[in-house]
Image (tube, rainbow, N blue to C red):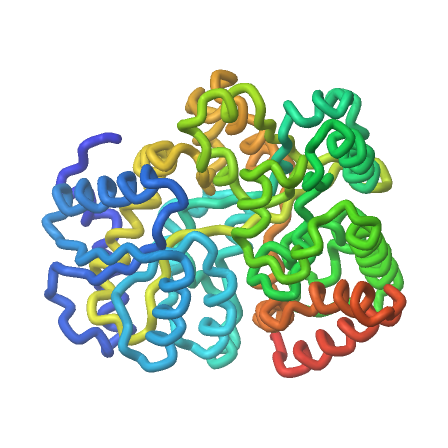
Length: 459
């Protein structure tokens, strides 16, 4: 990372700070040099070490101070929601997966517009990351940036290559289209059980009604694979009335519930939380899993044999029609609650963090679990595609180097409520537990989604 003088840190943001002071008279002490920052705990210790290093280097360069609290994901979510509701807020919240928090709070005008911060690097940031960082404000009736994005992530396939070989198969023979790729792993279950692995399942399918994130993410990718990616469009409109979207949802529910009812998925999957599929994979209770980031592999990086010889990461196959499939990507970074005491330093810190060299060093320090929102960083720094690491290159080639689309939360805050209510997991349960047809289960979920969307008028 290049060493920056305090003057160089401040010069890029002094104009926006002056403007912000005029626009936001609620700042209690604009002269203060300390900002209170809450950040999510990393999945591996290296992420927290990297974040503290970035903070320390910013403090040294700027002369400002960061009062930092790092907390687990669930605790951060709970504190953030409570703070935004009560108004007793920190100056900045740094979050890896803020799409469940930002849309509704932007809608309710509880966040500070950070468009001036984003503008400093906007020309370099991927379109997908920008779309995942802007939200509609229901009070101002405008869409603005409420997230200063630094990192992004996609969901690759996590596979025990040694179990595939033990079952008598070759990953090189895996089909190149979505449904057929999943089907490829089904017969491995019988073969492995016949060799003494009586508790093994083919796949760790996150078909849960509990969530909070993995089932929604999985369903979104099945929709994309089946041609239903336009269930929500950039204008914030829901398209459950589109026959193509309905057919994609029916095909998705039919296929996923078929895998479960066929016995290829652990029966507990209906009540899994986001960590349970990871745990099942680590315990070799399933041959493959589909889950966000490469945290699955990084959790076992000290087991050299498993990490370098047995575990395999693969990107997405094509859609079922044979065309390239886009990975759905969310962005992470910093956002500022309205009512923050020190917007000035919070914006300065994120302006600093978004500098390409700072962003790159921080995310590399976190072992590449998150990928920079500036795609040129990945192509310019050989570390990201270094074949010495078996997992990072295929992950990075999926996103940001492959085709991507943003999560739908930025298009309309209603989608956040749809996901919070686990409509897609409920649709699976309606088929599996209550005997509904996939068509009836999808229509039920669609009706509820339409009711939710009716509460939000965009534009």
